[in-house]
Image (cartoon, rainbow, N blue to C red; front, side, top):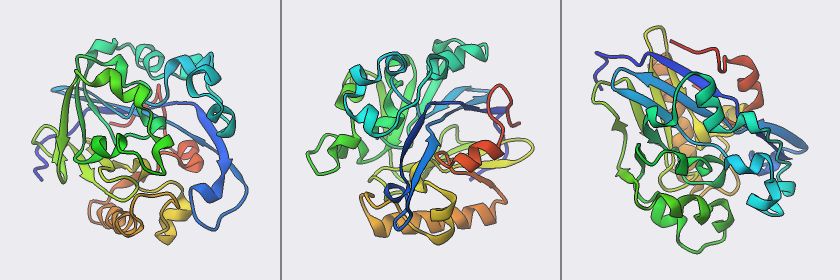
Length: 260
């Protein structure tokens, strides 16, 4: 990968939180945990990139109306100002300023705001969307109500690592395991390199022990991806941000602060 260019800024957007059993995220752990559901905004000279889109904005006012009984089962806490559209606007951007939406994968807690960006190009790992529409035991993790409205959008299914602008600044990393097309995002900034792990790993404790989520599509692939994430962290001297980890959220900057 070329390293001739860097992205300009990265903002972590403060999303809603979910609360449920730690054992659903890391095998063998017990007790409830409250964790964030963030999205990330990146400024590049060739556009504005959104990594994941969080929950459906309407769920902030009517969680049961959007997500049904699942809203209570997952302990959803969602204020209107935490919706991805409100946060982008609070930073001084319009929704039409978003030129690229990079999806880590297609689970419901990442796809809720996709419909807001009909003019953007969407990128997702190959095999992810067919898997989302195939009936199987984990089907509730995908919401067809989020995906169907985007059928006419500019979708690009990418295989392997994908360099968004061909300059090494923003690279979607192929990290299968959680789902077939799961990915993390490498962001090279002028002052540091950040890897947004997304759901390649869910908590620091699981990352440290190479433990995948119990409901992952492929345990073997998930472990390989966690180990690859560690190798990249070391070789690139990168900061790995585990998106759902509450300690990471407390430790790192979030909007309106940014990384550059």
